[in-house]
Picture 1: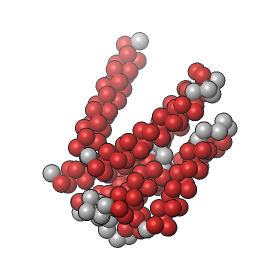
Picture 2: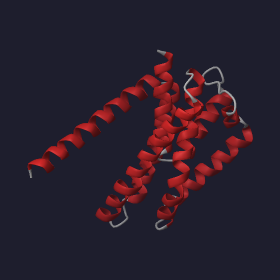
Picture 3: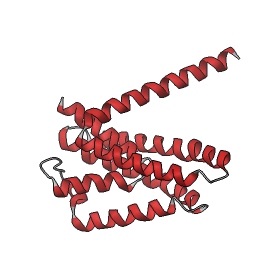
Picture 4: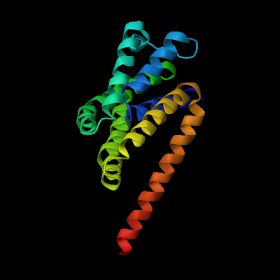
Length: 190
């Protein structure tokens, strides 16, 4: 059961990194620093709990949040984050999975990279362009705020209540699969 909870936690954190690269790393580092009985990171991931790293992550969270709310800058930010978010997802996955499981570090990094990269790709190539096109850019700030809130809630749930996070991820995966199959069926019948 602990291994499953570790996997849920790792996938939740890496999905969160696809929305905001630094929030899950800051959450993991903060919880590991202030509540090591809840989350004790192994080496080398324990560096995330270092106070200087926490300050740096806090600054990076603020920079990313502000950059994501400024028109035109948000598109440049998304281009830069195309590399950063998957890497942050890989780190978050490996750091949290290493706490409970003995998953190969390479496999953990790959899973985190793919999860965060997928979430970021959907955000940057589908959701945000659709919001920009349908609202003339006016909807980008509220959507960005919602993404930040979802990233914080997802990160905290992934660490503190991984069962809920796992359930949400499974439901979300089932909904996406259902939507995709339904869309494919409609395309074939048309």
